[in-house]
Length: 249
Image 1: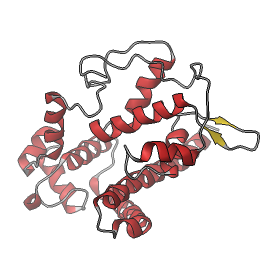
Image 2: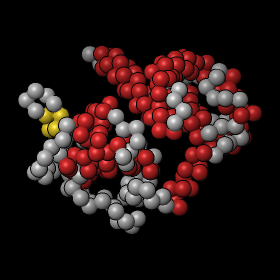
Image 3: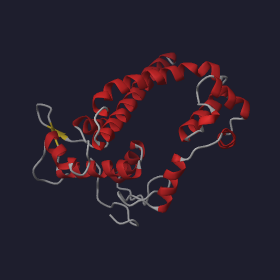
């Protein structure tokens, strides 16, 4: 892939798959592991659950991956690794390809070029890593100084002495929107407590991997933590939406 041209291959699961030898999940791992350190069967199954790849199944239910499936996995993993793109953004692009469309770029204008980081992308990564002062947080989030101080008081964002990152900015904006529905920071403290409990659960699961000193293990622990966190969010959303659905009956 060049920096100026997006992928034109039909990557969608709905396309005709090339004939030839199919692989089991272990063989897929062996094929991808040299390029993507830390890749695991759980990661591949997670991508399947998210609809990013749909391998064939045998009568006994075993997954069988075609060369096309492996290429699709390689494409998704490379964009995650090199451009830090959310799975939803990648899936939306692939869904468009599946429908026969020819999108020029991903949302936000990012190019589809794993391992080629544009100046624009580098600038966005720099922005993600920046530290904001309290006044900058107030100005960029639009929450107002009083609400921002309440967010600090109730533990939803940290102390001004430590500075604020993009995550704190997102928290502030979300809290401002919730306040418009009558939910004040004091009402939102359970979210902080729930996030801390979830983090503790995630840390417990990944601790055996995170305790290893090699770089690959550290990267794998971080990936595992993201996977588990996303699954926890899916569970939370399903539980809440299930209750909301009952309100309609």
